[in-house]
Image 1 (cartoon, rainbow, N blue to C red):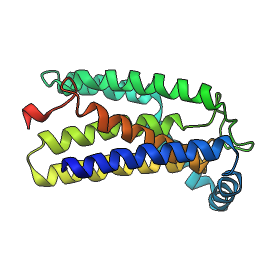
Image 2 (cartoon, rainbow, N blue to C red):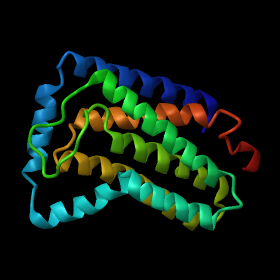
Image 3 (cartoon, rainbow, N blue to C red):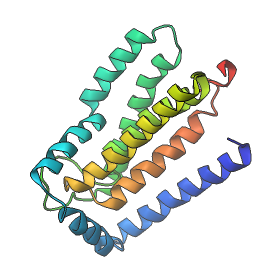
Image 4 (cartoon, rainbow, N blue to C red):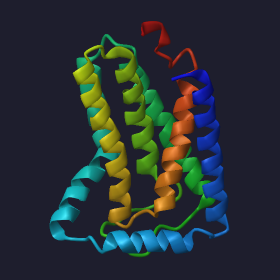
Amino acid sequence: MKEKTRKILFIGMFLFFLFLAILVCFRFTEKIDLAVSSLIATFHTPWLTSIFLFITEFGYIRFLLLFLILILVWFHQERFAYLLPIHLAIVTLLNFLLKQLFARPRPEFSLITETGFSFPSGHAMVTMAFYGYLLYVVVKLVKRKWVRNSLIVLFVSIIFLVGLSRIYLGVHYVTDVLAGYSISLVYLFLVTKISFFSLEETS
């Protein structure tokens, strides 16, 4: 990615997050949030709910920790495997702090029970940071085109579907998910420019 494009995306995502945060603080998003949630709720069916209950697991810490163990075992000689837990810890802490700052209640009606505040979505933040960094690793280190493209499609799909699952299950509003994605993209743009996290020297 060209440096100019990178800077534009970084600034754009940061401003987008600030924009959403301001709107949420003044409750300007309530109508659109409820409209989107209501629209998605019309698709509720037992089989689709089962699918999204499975998909949403990819964003829980318990699953990510298991995935981390597998990565550390399989790629124990690669530096990125030891950087992933750091990313996970940082973004989890950042999400906790942001939730406490905005203190937005979760949607009133949901298909599962979740605790804590709603904005920004922890699942959206964690999946974007975790699988997003894996995307960065894949682009930098995987040489076989078909393997690289397959992994890119897989990780992008997980990121999108996990966010969608949180809205479908009624535990987050669409603005919670979009804010989670955007602030984690800001994080990724920053850390991949820091020499400690960057893989430029191995590309």
